[in-house]
Length: 291
Image 1 (tube, rainbow, N blue to C red):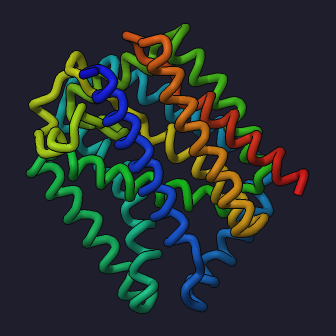
Image 2: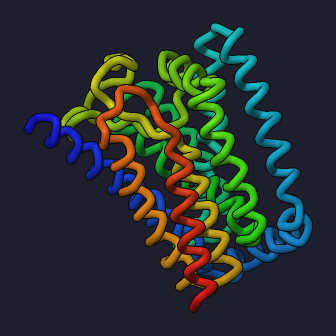
């Protein structure tokens, strides 16, 4: 009974966190002014180049992953990794805050306030070190990063990217296992790019330093949320609102599948989260073709 309660809490928190990221991303992706439209127009121009070149995206991803793995393995300076986390999170936070502020103010003011807001949030996270604040940063950052790429790639190009990255996820977790090594090291240095899910909601009050990888908690990499969201937003920008919600609905079926695969049979080791999410996203993409 205790194990069932733990699994339900884990699933409920995971589902709600996915919902929060998708809701934020959708909210900041709806144009609210002519200035937002102008930004989207610039991004759409770059789309004419980048949408046809998913290889560029994949090459960049591979390069960043290799460099990050080498640094994680050899660089032990905690200060560097906290700064590394901060720079990565800042980009997503800035985008999310910028498009949120454009609902209520001008572009110039939004830029300034978004920069200051992102910096303040990261400073407070570094001082507080609470799980709830860390997760808030990841939710906002994942939404912002997914929005950045969603407008630049058409769904077909995005599908190719996700298919390759899902295969990579399997290799990185089950074969080379370097993904697990990176995650554990960054977790220890409080620079983990992902959501931390404790057994209960009250666990969100804990500090990051109070946790250990062996504790009864779960973790979801930011990429496991941002990449499926990237696909849904690609449909939003290039296909339409209905397509976004259809693909999103199937992705959430993938969340259920992901949790089920993790629980039945009960697993004592990490599993790649991206493959089931991508599979159901592709089913949603296929279903759209039938409409």
